[in-house]
Length: 181
Image 1 (cartoon, one colour):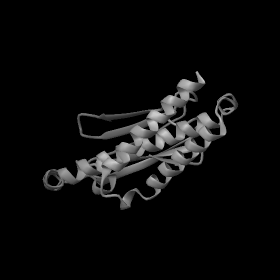
Image 2 (image 1 turned 180 degrees about the vertical axis):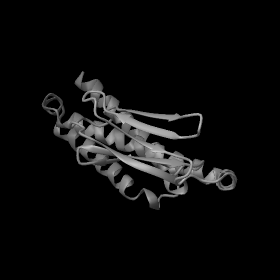
Image 3 (image 1 turned 45 degrees about the horizontal axis):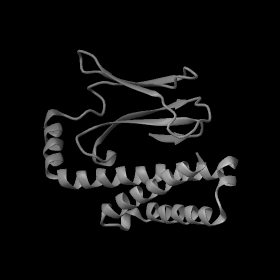
Image 4 (image 1 turned 90 degrees about the vertical axis):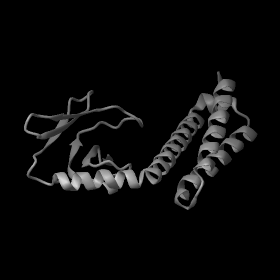
């Protein structure tokens, strides 16, 4: 899913791999009319397959009721049985690589989420007034380091670096929240 000006792009893939780019794209649609909302604002995506193998993917934003859908039939962009079997075999061959990619993606998402929460906490006036300048500087430095790790994640061979820093950042964040009350 990609955010589009007050909308979100929903892309539908078939395949067994962790990365979308390693799978077969079946189609896409945009769910427009989304109100400005905080990160992680929920919306529902529903997949249904009828007895003829026709796939319908719909998305709805609950607060506005805005929705859109795409219908994908067997005759358009779908893989043959042989191609599907080939993809399954490829998925088995690349299983270790896919697990590493997924682990890194999860660590990056967790780090990004932690940075987001810390920045928002620092912005709040009641939080800002309860922290001394030294604490604010430590937090800003930790956020800068995390942002740098996120910017250069492709150059990291070790996912452990990201995972360790996520834990360190979460620990700092909990201490800040504990101080503030």
